[in-house]
Length: 176
Image 1 (cartoon, rainbow, N blue to C red):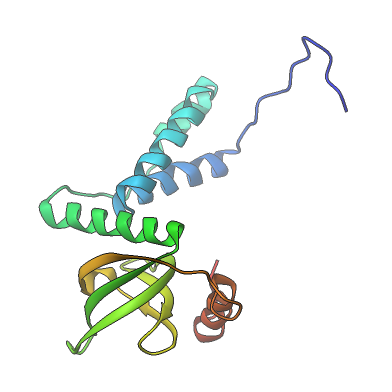
Image 2 (image 1 turned 180 degrees about the vertical axis):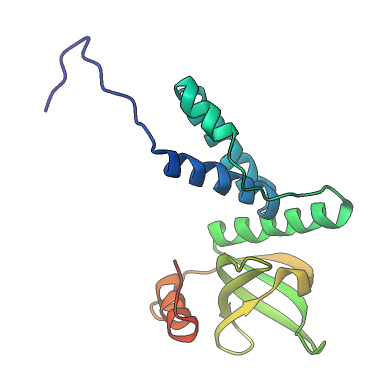
């Protein structure tokens, strides 16, 4: 198909439920994600709101599902850690960290990060653990001394995000 000069395409329009989902998703990203995702979600929503007709803009502003957040040093450190881990995933960079498991046992890990998952109350970092030579999940709030090693990795078949999500589906029943 070819549009003639001067032709106009109707704007993308959202249903009320779709718009509310975008607003709520943005609020959750601002409350729980790192600054990179929070800023991106807020900027995207501002662009969407700028082209909405007044009645839909008003409905978006009236959404009554909130994800309150607060600013303090601990929360800011957590946001920075999520940003660091998110960056390591994108760059395919090996990280090293100290970890305390739920029983308080310490370990040191070299890790190939593949994804971040948010479980409603906590984040987990999923990927390939070089110590255990298998997929593992680690909670960032139990990690200390996280460093980017400078070493890049190439996800191998059976050790990539597709294999990881297959394993997680088997263990937990869902991963989307």
